Image (cartoon, rainbow, N blue to C red):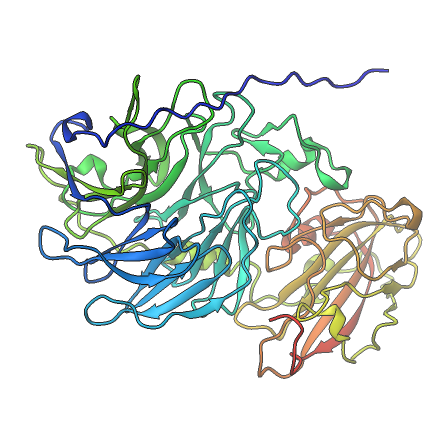
Length: 576
């Protein structure tokens, strides 16, 4: 008998001694650039944002507020507090409205004539609990949708809330949101490439695996993709210390994971990120990205404490290197960069949350400023991703589910919870318990090797049909599923013969059954629960979506049937 033995890597807790704020001469930038300090003694300065008028705003996590530094030409006026809520961190502007995010809430407020904020209105109240990573960040995409980064609760664990370790995408009113991408341990910094409109971010690697393990990851973040955490990191390397739920092998999880595009020094701690789409810096800096590196606390030789530049070629990250250094040396650290933004004049502004300072990096050299015309970040990429799988017939009516052979066979699908065409009980909706209902079907014809389920709502808008459940590799001898199934990639229930049943992504990005949730005011929606008998067992990755499942099913459907249930938003829903 043999067993795998994992040798622990040596790790350290080593945060450099804090020194006085650095002299400007100690901060090193490329030739031709100059650094000035434009504000100091501000407290715990974190995320920076500029209003359309050019006023500078900074959130302070420890103070739980937002300061405004009004633009007065080449300088900024003394700070004024404009909002205050516990845990306030992320900030973004959309016209004359500001968006603010705390650990669990998203607020909006009107931006008044003088730059102050009007009353705060809460539009989201139920973001996941934070745990280890409570620094929520927020941005408005080129598609006029709200993107919220939600970090993991832990260093490495199996999250109980599927919205942790994700990038969320929400409507501007906060009423509809989905998991845009998952497996992102803590992507505080993200932005859209000015030319391609694609979303890029820099994710924090796992701690306690060694000084140089794991790298900080530069990722192109796309809808429905998984980025590995907590089981996979970097270039799809397996984490030796954690076992996936549902008895999945890490090799199976690796198939679903998108490897990083580039890596950077482990534990450097990437924070706010911004693409340079301005005219002051030389041409070679245009459409590059800058990231503030907060600095390590758990490696023997400190890393980070700097601003890095990610070079992009033809829309893809090609290299990353320090741009501004000098906050750390043999004697200790004199500051920790955090927030970062590019102002209307093309200056790079960044915050130091240890000393409460804000710095400006300007170009004063002989190289000509970029002559390339400024571009507006296109919305096409994000809109195209959001429209994937929309505007198509339900699965039953698609060519991929055409029944093979001359003799069409029908499955009789039923549920003790509701009759065909009747109302689905509230407990099975996302407004209540969100529990899957008991489901039965008649046995498939000779040659049936497995069953698959796709539940869709063709009455939803603007995405239609909305997918509520995707499942496959249900055993050939199974014709009933009990109520309240586990929401995970692979089920393990040998007693009921469901060991090995796989579940994929709903439109919301969640795994497993997602109950009906039509908006207020809509007439009853019709939920089509479609069951397919297949002549094979499918080999597709965990967490696959409906379209991946349909592609794999093509040519293998030998019988199908459906049950239709209706649902309308309750007058008094248990959950919002």
